[in-house]
Length: 454
Image (cartoon, rainbow, N blue to C red):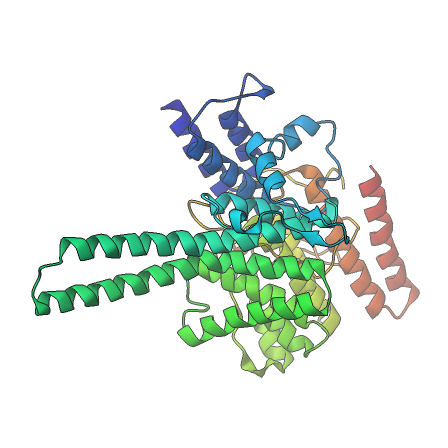
């Protein structure tokens, strides 16, 4: 059917990194006639799945601050959050205020079960990654959604398992002892598999619960987040599937490792913090191995990453290398970041985003673990253009090794270029000894401010 083809097309655009076009396709699937009030009368399950994927699509390529400016296209930007199903879900899990001024969820027991916990998960994740544009209470609301999403995921899976076991008991009530023993072993194996599946479903939800605690701040919340991420990293190391995993689980490890680096920054050696930050295909780990320290810990690869996760990892890596005084490594990471802004998918070399002269996704539900950033809101623009180092010479990053992380709009690409130039200017300032170098770093800052103003 035509709707089925549109679903496939939207998913393909998402996989290719064309998130803005994918957003338009999901809007077309959920709205008709160009009117935001005229909703398509389709099966509720299909609508919820489409909304869940649309939310994941936005999360995958989100840039901090992009919700603060709509560029005259507010209707096209806000349609998703104004959908009736989303509004009802937010209303149901809104946080009330008691007479004593304490925050409280109404009818807590009745809100445990979520039939579509993927939708709740992706909605909460989008609220968290875009929290800088929202009231502080939204982070608490997102956390409540995640708490109930985790409970629902585990409860639904356990219920399915128990129902299957009971039906088999009824069907095989008169078998002999040997057959019953084999059936019992089969049930135990199925139960083990079911629990493993439940843990896989709950893993990304727990990671983002930890992320919500980071955003909420405070010693207790940060300690809770630290425990969650340490548990994830330790389990991966013990299982031996850490860096060799594929898909969602490997991406989850990279997310946990990156956010653990954010929490441990300033509390352990810079070498150990650097090794926690995931590496992309565009960067070797030679600077880690040659810098000393770190205890020989293995680097964590960034697998099945979203554009937002790639940009965050590259910037965090550059930031940490700058703190170490490793100018070569920092500029290499910034070169990879700038170059990645051109590519939405491998083989796409068209367009020059950001040059106007100027705290990781899964499959069907598109679960994307939120990444936290070491620096929030930094500013500036390109020095010598994307893919060039501070001296204006070509970057050493090979074009076929550049990760794909093209932002969803030119404005967002300009903002990321500005962030990279801010860090480069700071690096040059710290390394400067004479007036010539000092002028160079100020040129970067002035150019950044001018480009952002335009």
